[in-house]
Length: 116
View (cartoon, rainbow, N blue to C red):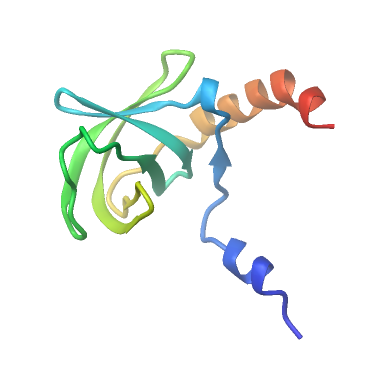
């Protein structure tokens, strides 16, 4: 019998989760959204009540700004809206793997000891 939790975690690309204090920002025009997690082809953001409403299927173009000032232009569509969060799928753009790897190394170095 398969594990339902394990099935939910199967994804096409590795997903990097960010602690609250280290969350990158998705910048769309003048609006900023906290990125909860991301992969090379997708990301999940928090949408607050005071931010513009995004709808399923909306096409998004913006910039992801990481803690170390690395930036990545992104272009994709809203594929899920749930509990104050949106998921963006980016089939035509990607966050460079080298940027994600650098973020992962930083998080492991600064947060590994705190979770044990």
